[in-house]
Image (cartoon, rainbow, N blue to C red; front, side, top):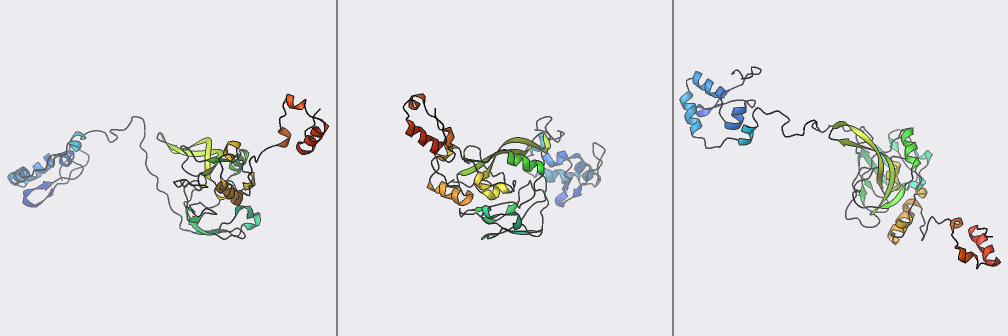
Length: 313
């Protein structure tokens, strides 16, 4: 043992073959140049200084310049000032496995839930086994067969959100949307969208909700109210909102015009929606220009009253 320069922790020098000595990893000179005063001092005390110098002279390995320059520098060198380093958190996996059956969402009722640890849906042709982390907001792992698409998805287990979260989830509508731009993962099952996006997998569901994310300046999750996106599957939405009704999915006019037969058939199977040219047309909102009103006779007015509920004077 040799006293350190800073006087805190002594260095451990170990003799080796051919008169060489090695110092520990806490010695900066040994790490960078392969020689230090501690090894020289021990070799001199043991009367092997000449052998030590001769052995070092035969080495052709060049000093490590990077380690040499970093000697004496602070530990956080190269980092932006005032920004703490981010460390990966270790999550404990749950060993308990829960079994559930997932079928068509339209058949889910309050009587479908059974004893703890087993959640089932009546008349379900699909079976799923999953396990996940303790925090329901983290990514859960499950292998589930997708309903109607033939592609595998990963879904977390059902849980009971808080009243505040349920109220927020039901206040804002769920809108059909095509996957574009930075839309990359599902807010329900946390899985990324598979590419290439072929119909009907190029559809998603847009919603406004609270989203958690991490920032470099803070180790605690931050919350932000913004747009979130789900797989175009009622099961993914009901992971966060058990009271979501598939038939209440809203489809904008601009989105309806882009739907092909594959999209419409898929929405019919998953959400029970029979999509025509204009799904949300309201008869009473039919606009009649002034020039057209002047040309209407009593037959026209009576017909518009019966069909559209318009009372034209």
